[in-house]
Length: 328
Image (tube, rainbow, N blue to C red; front, side, top):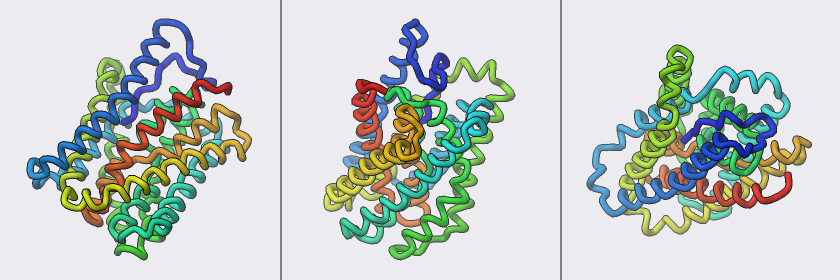
């Protein structure tokens, strides 16, 4: 769920006292608060009424395409110029993301001795690009929003080149991984919709501006449907595996947030940028992970992504609230 950045924010992410700032702040807080509740309700629906979603699994890639189109339509040329302005910081964020989270996924799977399907699912979550809600959580934490947007954008664009080989390398010991097919799927469900959304924004920006406030909610509802479908597909296994998966997700996400923040401090990026790094590393595009797990492994392998969808937004909101009260 990518939310449109409040236009009054600059690189230093100072929150103004004007009406626009207050409105943007309220909107962002509402999105971060409601989204995990909506996803949690969708997961409960999928668990209690799995028969209602029979045959829906084939629609998951198309639903993800809607989410990525919404992400693309919120992008502007400034997002790409931001990468060129701060190549070192963006490169550090990108490397930290694709080293820390895949490595943690593999380590957690081994530490908890997860069954093959769940282990592959946890690793796949770690190999996904940055989460689509990381930008607004960075904003709430009084972090460097511009850096957050740049890292999220680049991690999404390079996902077809990075996610499949990493998954093959780390999850191949658990299940067969068709990296070539995975590249094709990411191109179709991520890059194509993102670029389509960006093209619409560039060609019809005046009309798109009016629809921007509704896009986060469209993304939130669509991701919730994905979660409901994924949970329904593995409802029979959830009762026995949910506790173990929850522990794995909490460890994976919590260590990712901490190590991402540490990478920013180690790279001497400063406090606001380190906060952005925490969320760009620790928050994953779990919708993509769920879609890939369902298509290439099994509905059970998609369970970690479904749980991650809820938990990383809850933990992100809590961490943002705590960081926002600290001196930068």
